[in-house]
Length: 87
Image 1 (tube, one colour):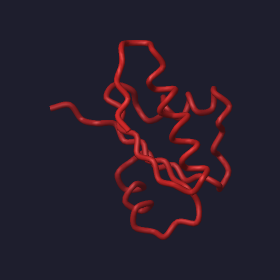
Image 2: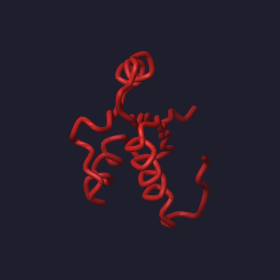
Image 3: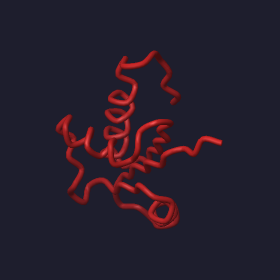
């Protein structure tokens, strides 16, 4: 899903809510923010009450962890958050 819209319309919150729902149901969700760092997304997840610190959802925020998540068989859902690099 590509979420597009004007500044401050809730795109990030919507994408995080969708990612959490997908991951909690055992799926894999990949977020690629253009402007915000992965740590900001983790802060938003906690602030919206979607704490995923338990073992029910795996979160990867760097390339190495993302590769581990993609290579390993998963028993739980996963969210990969990697900031895109502007050229």
